[in-house]
Image (cartoon, rainbow, N blue to C red; front, top):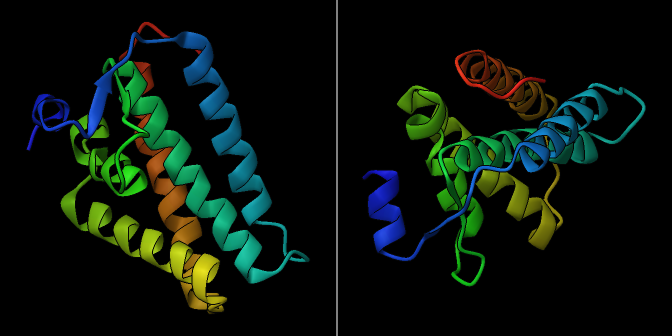
Length: 145
């Protein structure tokens, strides 16, 4: 499925690229990744921070492609994260892993589930990888950070 397909079915909306919005998302992604690495914070908070780093990268990448999430539709985060392969060239296996992080994030939010050290480390590694993909994409863009 393409970004245009997601727009046609109402999952995305057309959104003019906005350098300030993209920069803000990148700043938030970097802050969240830093927070995820603070050992004195709970594993759950660190996991949430790493997950949000990934989400902010996905939002910024979508905006660079002239799209944004349609927040009037359910499943916004799942849709946004599913576009990482289209916007940043993220391999399918990592997109699938990111979706598992999303499910884990919502299980923690709604079911008070705890996270293991292994899950946390995988999410931090995933966030680092997505941020590297984003930086590589930006290096080909006219936007500077």
